[in-house]
Length: 157
Image (cartoon, rainbow, N blue to C red; front, side, top):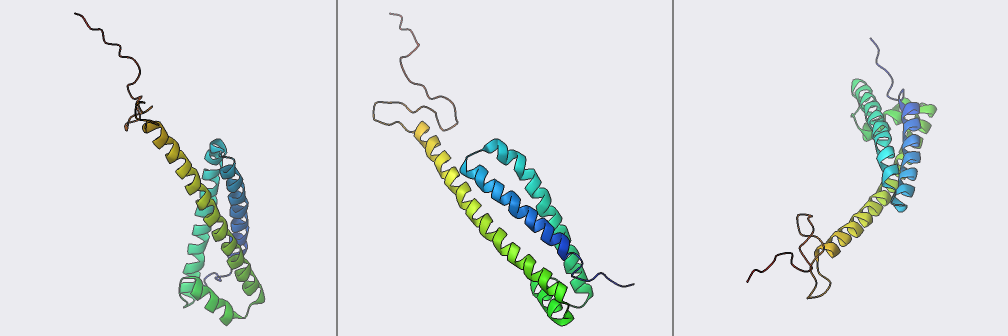
C-alpha cells in the first residue's frame, strides 16, 4: 500500500491560507470599526478555515512520518529538498510565505483587540470610579448601579 505524497495537500493548504488571509483582513477592518456584529459573523467562518488547515497539516505530517521524515515543518523542508520536485518546492515556499503573512496579520489584529480591550476596561473603570470626592460611582464592582442621589428613605420623627 503506497502512502500519499507529503505534497498532496499543498494546493488545498495554499487555498485555505489564502482564504484565512482574506478573512483576517476583513477582521482587521471590523476591529478598526469596532463592528462586533460583523466580528460575531466572521469568527466562526475563520475558525472553520483554521480547523480545515490543521486537518490538512496533520495529514501532511502523517505522510512525512510514513516517508521517514520528521512530522513537522523541518521534515517537510527536508522532504522537499530530497524529492527534488519543483512543484512541491514552489508549493511549500508559497505556503510558508502566506503563513508568514498570516502570522503578521494575526499579530496586528491581536494588537487591535488589546487596544479595544484596554479602551473598554477604561470605560468600565470610569463608570466605577467617582470623578470627584463628592460624587458616587455610576456602577459598583458587581455591575449594579451604585446608590447615589437623594435618599428615598423617609424619616419619621
